[in-house]
Length: 288
Image (cartoon, rainbow, N blue to C red):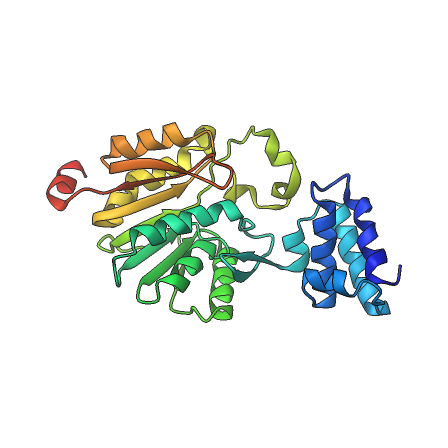
């Protein structure tokens, strides 16, 4: 193998481990060469240097073992933002952009405010929101020290150091009187018996960020039940969840006293985000 076109033909080597072997090879080769994917087809006869060929071989070998593209490259784009990624957090996925869209729609008429991201991981949700709402104060929490360090690194990379990243077991690091207009989260929501845990990229992601007790609902229930302590009257809670959990999550919201509860779908038209509004203060105080 010496040329770009010959390197692209090696996609066949990834067929047993990837649903998109051609795309995988394009991404890895573009990364090694420091070029856009379209460049590969514009200059297919370009020869790789010895160093480039060796690096591509190493990357391809890691992918053949099933390692996620994001971990090999060390980054993933989310909301058009380049984010550093490592094995300490979930890899940001396109479906989670739906939560960002909903958060932005809810705050469109608010020139400023305070937003909270629970279980921030790479910081994807918090940083995407902050990039679109420069006048808002944004706080990102995670129980993993490594995740918080990564979120801070991403904030520096994007010039969004104003996003406050704190080590916290859900709400635990927050003062009791600290409240927000918006609380959002993509918490663990997979049951520990789910067979998908043994397939694809999730095999390389931390189980603590994936799995929750009570058929995946334990952490969601905890977030919902404690959220009124940190929501302002009229504030919104948004939670990403599994596509079969919409009904159960809506019930958790409703039982806790939220209003205007609804579930929105993702890019595949499957239930993905449930949201609800904490009622006016005179009602909220009665229900706490």
